[in-house]
Image (spheres, rainbow, N blue to C red):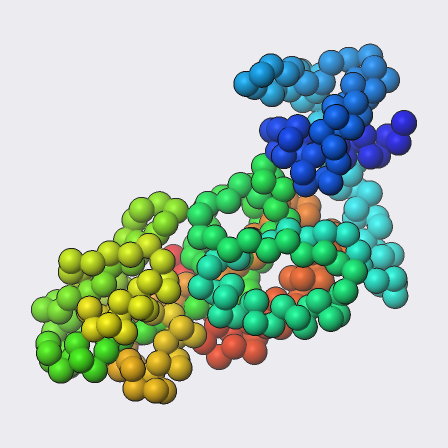
Length: 310
C-alpha cells in the first residue's frame, strides 16, 4: 500500500465530504477509492469513517488521523516545493480555478493562452461563477473574488483594486438631465446591482474629500450580474455603478457618459483565495504569479493602497 496516496485519498474524501466528489477530483473510480480506504483502515486497525446512505462522518480516530495526515501532506508539499519550484522540470498535474463571470471573461480568459503556452503540461479546469464556492468541498484550488472577504479558513492574496464609476447612456441623460453634484443624484433612477451570493444590494458609496458618502439610489430594476448591469445602462434604463474595465470601451465609443467625473465609488479589492497551506504547490504559485502580472498591467485593476477598503 502506498501510504502517501492513501493519506491523500483519505484527506480528499474528508474535505469533499463525499466519496463521489473525491473520486472525481482525484480522477479515480469510486470503487478504487473505497477499496483504498478499506485497506487503510485494515492496516491501521481502526475505523476512520462512518458511512451511511445519506451521511459521511469521521470517527474520533478518523478525526485525529485526519489532522495528522493534513499536516504530513502539507509538510511533504512544502519540502518538494523548494526543489520543484526551482527546477527546470515542467509543471504538470491539474489546477482547478473559479473566476467571477464578468472579470473572468474580460480580463483572465482572453489572456489564458499565455499561461497555457508557459505551462503546456498543466491541465486547467476553469469555472465561471459569482456564487459562494466551498473550495475544499468542491475540490477547487483557488478562486478570484472581488470585495472584502470574511472567510478566515481561506487565505486572500491581493491581486488588484477594482475601480468604479457612475455612468449612463446619452439617451438617459438627455431625458433626465446630467447631475452636477452628488446631491442631484438623489433625483435619478439607479440600476440596483445586488450580490448573487448574499442577495444584498451593493452600496452607492462615493469617495469625496470629506470622506465617503452613501446614497439611497434605486429605481424599478435590479440585477445580480455585472454584465447585466452594464447591458441595462447601455439601454438607458438608469445610472449604473460599473467597473472601469467594463465601461472603458463604451465611454470611448460614446455609448456611455461618465457622471460626476472625479468623484468615484469606493474601490474594492480583488483577491486570490485558496485554502491555508495550498500556496506551497508550485502549480498554484505559478498561476498566482501570472495573475499578479495580468492585473498589474490593467490600469483599471492594478493593485493600490487597500487601507480604504472596508
